[in-house]
Image (cartoon, rainbow, N blue to C red):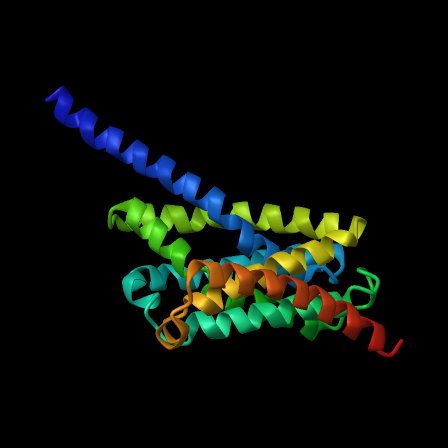
Length: 227
């Protein structure tokens, strides 16, 4: 009897630990997107935007978890998400010359939240599958894993945004990383795979090229931007 009670408990603990580890290891990309999207907002609005964006994205993930196996096969999803992440990376570099606490219009906060939600949903299919797999189909564990990702992502995003404002060179590093993330998303979309059949070497080369292109384009466009 004791052994029968111990086994479910031990399995539960192992699943919880696996979910925590997944959230910690997979939160980085999402936190970086949020940090880039809210960097130019004043401190208070930055925190509000991070919290709203992460909470809305995770709420949508709850529904997506139940169709996780199909999500990865939706043609053009990763492709469109990757192009959007590229756009965010370049836009942030163009805006990097603006003071981080410049006057912000109310709609810019909502715009940042929209960026966060769309980018997070298109980037999180792997995260959703990982949490769904670690939960073993248990709905309560799925909710736990998805809810746990909120504080991880918000804390990381706000820390990254503060560091970017203090050390502007990190904005370029972040944009470069998003270029790599976007390249991976684009080349693993079902449409791209079916059309080009890219090898691992091709993916690495394209990701590296996009890192350079994003940083160069952002720098060039920021110089041409009217004062």
